[in-house]
Amino acid sequence: MALLHVEHIGIAVADAQRATQLFDLLLGAQPYKEEVVEREGVRTVFYQTGQTKIELLEPTRPDSPIAGYLGKRGPGLHHIAFEVVDIRAEMTRLAAAGFELLSDTPKPGADGKLIVFLHPKTTGGVLVELCQEVILNEL
Image (tube, rainbow, N blue to C red; front, side, top):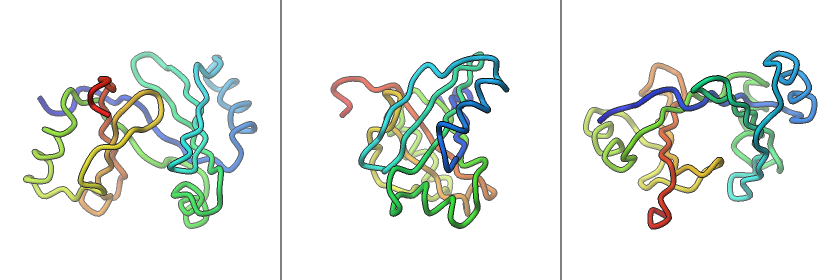
């Protein structure tokens, strides 16, 4: 079925507390969820903006992917995530179309999702995430 819609936009930040103050004012709203994903070494803060979400990503350890990103590029847009119905089918479809997946299987991510990323060198320089609502037997 392909990609449904932009599920969220990920923004790398060095300090989630300061970024949250800024986005509270910018969006005129409070975050609906904060979560630490230990495996990825990241703290996430989620805002709902209509159908799309904003995800602030703060590293929780110096060896995390987000810490590496901030060290190379500084704070700002990190990725765009698309909701999919069947993440495994989309992985197969996109790999067959020549997109490079950053992992062979989806993994649990923040906000109750299964996720996989596509390499930016095959997506026009943009890190793309596919995400699917977790069904209990999917994990």
